[in-house]
Length: 237
Image (cartoon, rainbow, N blue to C red; front, side, top):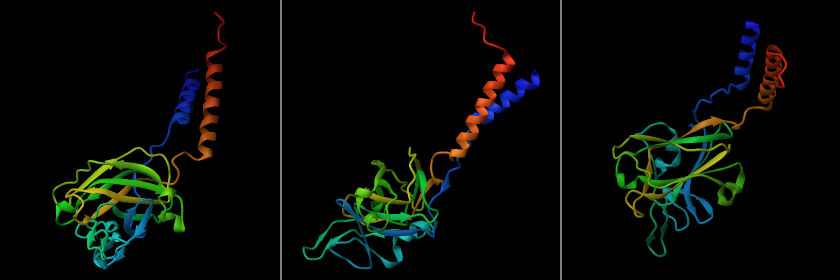
C-alpha cells in the first residue's frame, strides 16, 4: 500500500507542476527597427540626417538600430520634428521606434534601458509600450495596437552608460512592438537619446500547448481514481 500511495503522490505532483518560463531577451541585431515619432493616431517613420516639417530626424550614425547592438557607447538620438516654414522646433517628445523581433511573436514582461553617453536632459522620463500582430501599412496605425504599459515617472540613472530594468504584467503575445517616450528629463525642447533598449519575456504564446493540458488532466484523473481505490469507499457516516 505504501508503494501505491507513493505512486499516487508522484502522479499528482507531475499533473500539477507547471514549468517556469525563463525570461529571455526578445530583441537582437537581426530585428527590423524603424525610428520615428507618434503624431496623434499614427506612427510616422523618421528621416536620417534631414530636418523635416512632417517627420522626426536623426543623425545617420545614431539611428534606431543602435539600441539593439548591446553597446552603451552607441546611441539612438532623435531630434524630433522641425517646422521649416514656421521655424518651430517640437523637440524629442513622443519620438521612439517600431521593432519587429526576428524570433516571431513573443510575450513581453520586462524592459531595460541604458543611458546614452552625454546630456542627461535628453533622457526619457516616461515611456509607452504597445504591441500588435498587424503587418504592412497597419503597423503605422495606432488603432492596430494594444497598450501593454504606459509608465510616467521613469527615473533613469544619472550616470552615463548605466542600465535600469523594469517588469510589468502582460500575458498576450505580439509580433511587433512600438515604444515611444512621452516626456524627457529636460522638458520638451531637448533631443531624445537612449543607448540601448531591451525587452524581456518569452517567445511564443503565453499558454501551455493543448497536449500539456490533456496530459496533465489525464494524469490527475488517473491519480484521483487510484487514490480512491487505495482509501476504499467513502463512508456515508
